[in-house]
Length: 221
Image (tube, rainbow, N blue to C red; front, side, top):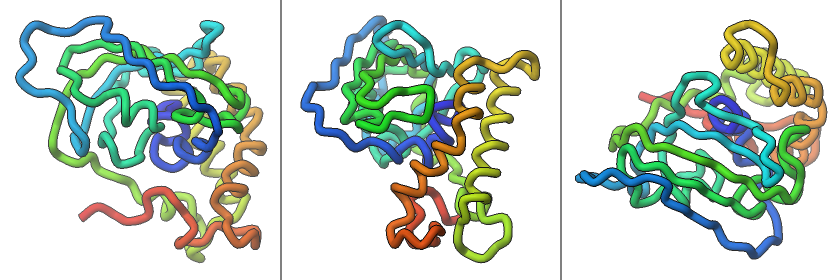
């Protein structure tokens, strides 16, 4: 979820959720308001605050550090499976703790230098708002495809990822000293590019075509 949930929330955030672990998702309700007229359901747009840690307590991301809540559509694959499953039937103002096994998170490969492979993730989340309106979805393919040839090269993906992480570091720390996790991701972004190509470049020709690209690639009307 880094920033817009790990690696833009849409494209990079769902690339590595492949594993063989059979542990179950654990959901603990930390706080629930007495009044709850509406509960979250599949297809709703949720606005959340969250903090993500590993089992050793090390923090890898937090919307609170950026003072910017995160919005996404529940149940359509915009976030990791642990979120899609663990945030159903939630009230506005409710707080939960999600313990997410690897196969519902970032799988055997992890996410760059920040989340190791086979990592169990712990998220403390607070639901800020529920809406039935779909969030605006950027055409990420178009944003990455700088030369407009309808395919993505390693250089284009590397430039996009580097620019994105630099912006997230500035947002997280108000342009001051970058957070350690963001610095690690930026330093390791070449490895992330290779992981992305391993997953997305189905025909292994060195480019990600429009058809192969699994992220958002259509402008919203």
